[in-house]
Length: 97
Length: 208
Image (cartoon, rainbow over all chains, first blue to last red):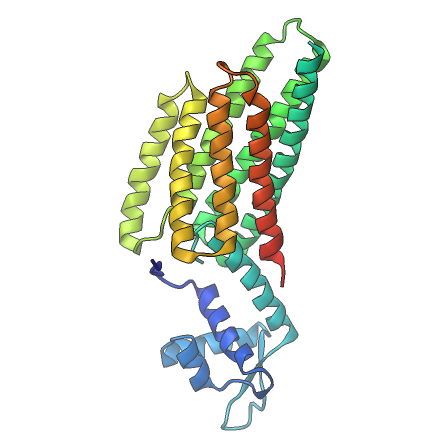
């Protein structure tokens, strides 16, 4: 028995993107990897990447380079840890976030 | 009278501990709501807040009763008992609303309207036996917790299921207190264990 998720909140989409970046650890993640891992359209990906950059949750390795690679910042890692705690709490009560 | 008062004081201690844990759940749920904006978390937070306010209200009211002795305290005690029972039912209704299984957006909105309407009507219909109503509402909460555990198989969901089940058990035992007064402390003990189970969930979910 598995529950169908009705829709993802914006916060979950951002967390999914950050998880994709975290999974690449020191190598960092490129846009394609994030796009597939977070299941996003190209437009949405760009919009959310800009938001993550603006909030300083991720950084771009070399903004001048054509080969874009993103890394989590310390703030981003802390946000993801907090999100996971909240995800477990919500899941315990059967609340999708 | 002395042994009864001793039981009552132990019961108050249990109630204070449970109230503090309910406040901790309120804090976590509020924090989660602020981060995600998920309305159900706000309902859950309000439910636990109402529950803790009812518990502390009962502790203060009963303590007042114990200090004053038996002169002219019957009315106060009745008010405290009814307010406590009503606050618990309100809290459980909020638990039913917040923990109901997720559906698609349109389905959910129409079900919300029907469900909340029915629940509010139910609170007006009840009065004579608040304990029975609390049991009926909690049965729904427990069923939803079972469904959630079956779909997620998460240990955190299991702690919540155990917590709600013990809470239901405490109400069932409380309903039988008139026939068997010995069930009173058992009921309070089950309630304390229910909240301790929720506290274990909070601690484990908060770990990195």
